[in-house]
Image 1 (cartoon, rainbow, N blue to C red):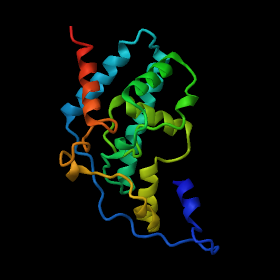
Image 2: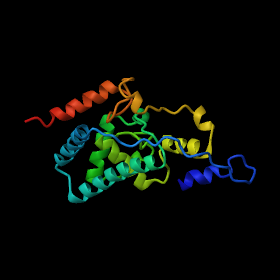
Image 3: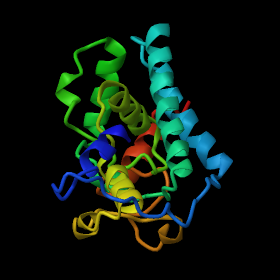
Image 4: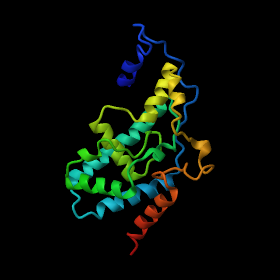
Length: 207
């Protein structure tokens, strides 16, 4: 938030701070399906626990990053941000690359190569477990907010019209299932590939 304020304080270069606009008129709270949440969380945990290289230290770090992402989501609501289930459409990592990140994380490998990658442009997604861990890790290691969240705050708090012209991807609760790629707990730009990856993960743990 500090970074955004510093950028916007004198956006027209006249030496004077810009007047903020009114806070968003709508604050959406989470009404999550507890069964769906438990299913995706347990699947993510099962995959982690099946890794022979998993250590207690790695479990702690992964858990902290996951909680960090969830907490950021709820703070977003406090700031007035709505759900954005289109955030994952800005992911530039394939499901296999995301799996590789988790493996590198668990193994303690250098993660610098993932610094400029993303799994979502918004913390206001309902993010699947591994992608949420990735976002939590980025929040821990970088100061910059996610692109859509940054734009939404600039628009809502500082009346920055330029954000609208950027036409960032956005889809909220009322858009779920209206479009095939606006879903809760999905991942990536290809809904069919994401579903295939999810089914593959489930089959992996069948007896």
